[in-house]
Image (cartoon, rainbow, N blue to C red):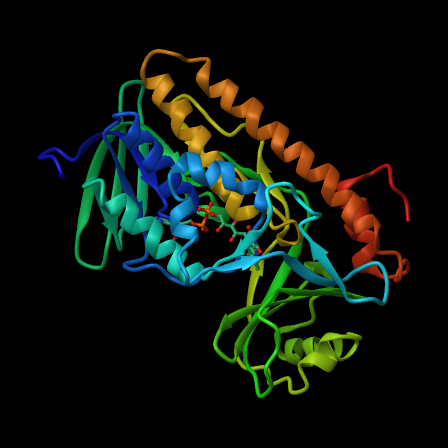
Length: 369
Ligand SMILES: Cc1cc2nc3c(=O)[nH]c(=O)nc-3n(C[C@H](O)[C@H](O)[C@H](O)COP(=O)(O)OP(=O)(O)OC[C@H]3O[C@@H](n4cnc5c(N)ncnc54)[C@H](O)[C@@H]3O)c2cc1C
């Protein structure tokens, strides 16, 4: 229930996986919170693979049953052409926890938001963050939609706004980009039937990621560096050239018709410290992962879970809970960086190419081409 003064212990900005995981955790801890989400209804986002080792976390969050819904698919790993000319099945390495999942992402976001709304907590959907002002006692959050402006008062604010880290920006906290990878993405209607799985294929100037979207339609993404991107009018030709360089994808998908191409940052970025006196960042707002890792969704849920508990502890008089959160998420980020470098090192077919040279030197100054 919305209270008269719109006063909450915690305001969470962003209703994606990280924001909802935080909200569910805080609600379970008896903390009065609300979620502010810019979209009126969920939109389809990029990212669909959940690895088997996420299952214990999903169980703890009480959302494993959502993922076992028939709209999501049991999944054993992507097909990948990386480091050799072969198209291999990258199984989740005979993981002792069995299979992972291939999400219907729109359905997953809808399920998560419905789960939160079942707690009868307040959900300001269709409201965008406009302003954040903090003093030593309270934080005042101004949000607006097309017709209304609302003022919320809270003790603590959570940034769950994804890559842009909008709350942090309002608080003048900068996120650091560790590389300049961009995704060029478009949807493609298929004339042929292709396997319902993710296919990854590296080329000279980056790599392709093709994921099921809906019946007879896939999302195509090409990842490259900002420095390599051609001017706008040459983007379609660039994509076509890169596509016809593929050994496997160009055989699997025989007709490439590129319509509207969207461009978005898709590299690694992080905050120096994921919390402050009265704020904390979760999910992509704190650490954004390279999509090759399939870390984003699981990490967003995990940081929401641990971040939610840290904030609940903090509000119950345990200030050490925030640096403890930092320790946990920073270590996870470090482990990701190590695996990322190893993964990019596997690809040695284009050692003269700017993409593969920059890729390694960006993460690891000690590795020379
Ligand atoms: C091209 C691409 C491919 C990917 N592939 C994968 C994959 O295969 N597997 C995987 O695990 N991950 C993948 N990811 C990453 C994954 O999608 C993200 O890591 C995940 O969505 C992060 O969740 P989040 O809740 O932190 O942020 P988001 O899902 O981005 O949610 C943030 C929410 O905040 C809202 N918001 C933003 N600004 C405001 C504002 N000012 N006011 C109010 N609300 C606001 C947004 O509307 C949004 O709903 C991919 C990402 C990209 C870009």
